[in-house]
Image (cartoon, rainbow, N blue to C red; front, side, top):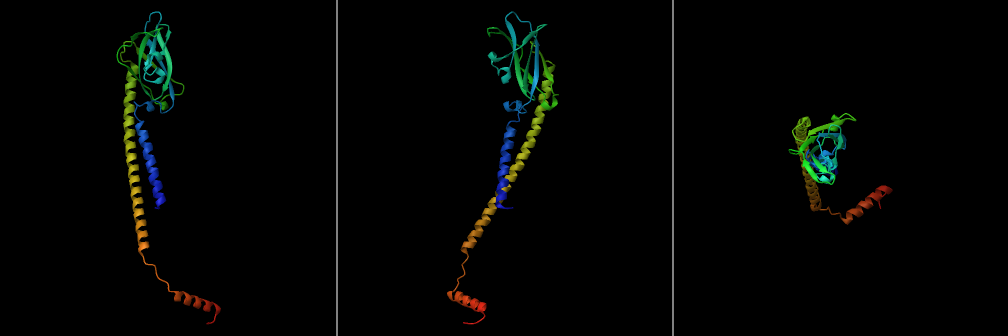
Length: 232
């Protein structure tokens, strides 16, 4: 293997290692990069029942930018429908993990009431598990009690975490292989440099054979005579 080839292998291995480390860092479901990594949005329909007073409205607020990023002034307002069912639809990245909560606000922006309980969790299926044109329905209660969506989200999150751990293990193994290849290539490169340096040292230390002037003259005469076919 030539020096140029060894250097190319070492460079490629180091580049692949950096790419794998970057991919590994973005593989957590909790990271901002993970929730939008596939670039596919899913229509999510939020629905909750609540009887408001005049001048009040129900909004949903969450950790995603589309849901206001926990800024009440940017919360998504739901629309009242018959039976005091408040509904809205937003598009969120498929495969994402989100946290959200409902809040009742007046028209002037004053908060009247927060949904009871802790923040709700929403885990969306991956894009390849969602039929084209389908919608994802989220039905909640203002008491904050777990709903069918809660159980589905917990199961999806458990499966997602298991998949991520498996991918992380595989990436770590691949990264170790690349590191070993890089180390081997560097060792071979250093060995080749040492061999080249030893060869140069040996060449410089070797004595140069002396050439006598008479030998050159005699040799020239002999060759000339042989060429002309006679002796001078």
